[in-house]
Image (cartoon, rainbow, N blue to C red; front, side):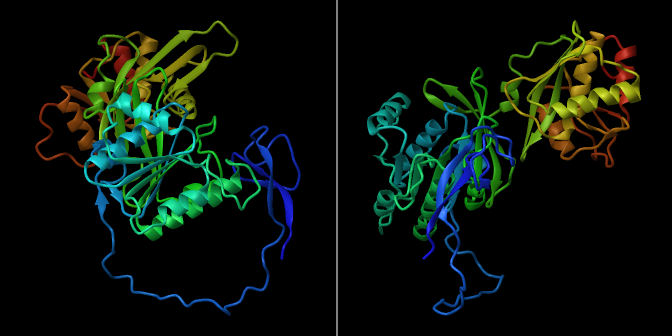
Length: 461
């Protein structure tokens, strides 16, 4: 039998070292190395003796027990791919206080009202604390089985029954522990082993398992990266504390599309669904203001319009500032370099600030042209017309490249009353055009610079 030995594991990335160090050499995190107990070597000489032969089947066939359960929260159902799949495991991560527990409590309450049996197991709060939240949300009448427990052995004994619940929430995976391990709850070995046991039971009993996970200061899920590989779906709950809007984003989904988002608004009655996020993000927009541009983006399968704000101001320091909220800092630097080298528009001596209004984070390159328009609008002090939307990818040579789902973007803009669009040159024209919106195509970033230099309003002629 292999004897136990000490090892040191990084709590941020799961890297293993033979001794304690102050900074992890793999991820660069400070003070994240903790001692962990593990077997010094795995058993050697494993053979086929005593093993059970597995049965192979053909690839063609009808999946068994593949049915979805609607939660009653349309935004959550959208992100999960149309509902919860029986026997699936979902990992929900987000900053502290962002609303993870509130969302899952509302979800299981809706499911219970629809006839499903649901269990909510909290390792962070007492039963009375969860009851107080349910009363504040008006959910105290829902038939949800509530418990406060941290021992995985006790949780497995309670759920491994013939009448197991249909949906189970573990809040959170960092608080539960296995008594067979000497390490503390929340360590890499505890999180990995506890999640493996719970997921194995969920697959065998066929219930939906929600695991709430903490995130690091960089916004990544805490614990071993293998945890994200073990579950079927990984959901991130995002949002700024100063904004009431929350974004539920799917970054992994074995049963649906990734990069799908759901939009919620935090109120005193809990999280409310936002059916038209484009109108919500543009509600506070003011027209005829320089440095503001509306971008027609796509999140997952949903077209969405957001406002991009830019401010170009003279710098009083030797090194100008570059501040970005909601967009990639590297793409802003690239855009400024292209404007300087390809278009003769130098902004290197100015402070540049870029913000995506509403707290949304944009990752697609289709926002390049809209960000360039906002920068040029601020630099020339010429506003972008209030009825104009912009999208397109910009290359290093300054060319404006086509992006996907152009028709969906234009339809969303037309639905919200926008009459003009500044877009890349299209390979295929839409038969009959689009009703209600007039697209203007450009092929190079110099064309956009020329528009702001010659036009009084920064609009296509």
